[in-house]
Image 1 (tube, rainbow, N blue to C red):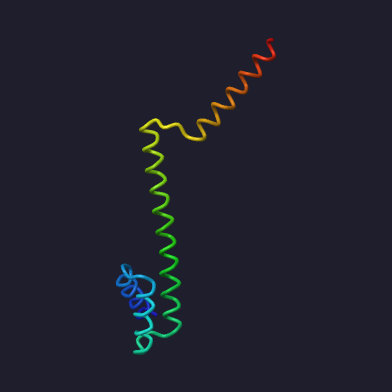
Image 2: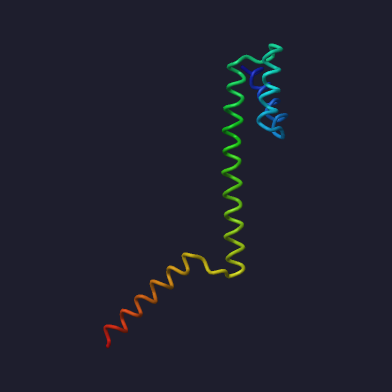
Length: 100
């Protein structure tokens, strides 16, 4: 188990910069040489995909946070701000109509 983990980690680090097709080719070659079993290769791919998804989600959150901070600094009006203003205008219009 420890050996499988080491192989997976080493392979994961080495494959991080490779495309999926290149990674599949490398893993297929390792399986052909008998250095990896089908189960090990499946586990590596599943772990690789899971970590990739986690990384994408983390990056998305970082980008959203940065954009929101930038918009606040630039004092850009957001859709939420516009909706709030529209609601307030509607309330004021209704109050004016009631007074007439």
